[in-house]
Amino acid sequence: MSLDHRISIVTLGVSDVAKSTEFYEKLGWKRSSSSQDSVTFIQLKGVVLGLFSRAALAEDAGVENTPAGFSGVTLAHNVASPRGVDAVVKFVVSCGAKLVKAPQKVFWGGYSGYVSDPDGHLWEIAHNPFFPQDEYGHVVLPE
Image (tube, one colour):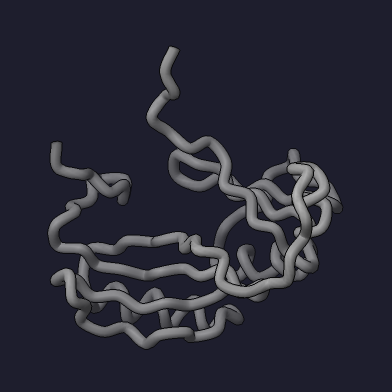
């Protein structure tokens, strides 16, 4: 037995499902008809984004709903150029994201910035010249 090399759904625990759904819809992402008042599902390229109450998600997992802070997790959206990073960051901030770190050249040779969604989930918007993208925008790692 082995685990297939994929992630099916990334679920973000949020304080207000409707507010978070509205934010992600402003990005142009579409809520699936399988969504309900208590949970939103958004089909992305190759993965589903779920938005679910943080308290309910903690309860479902059987863990304590500890205070918000840095969770040790970031999500990334890679683009084809540094100019693309600047454009995406500007757009996402205009949709209600908070600018956490302005786009800049970074130590590993790329260019990136950080924004956070309404619940503080960090998104890195990055151009990585060492990780090319296929025709669908998926990162292609070297073998």
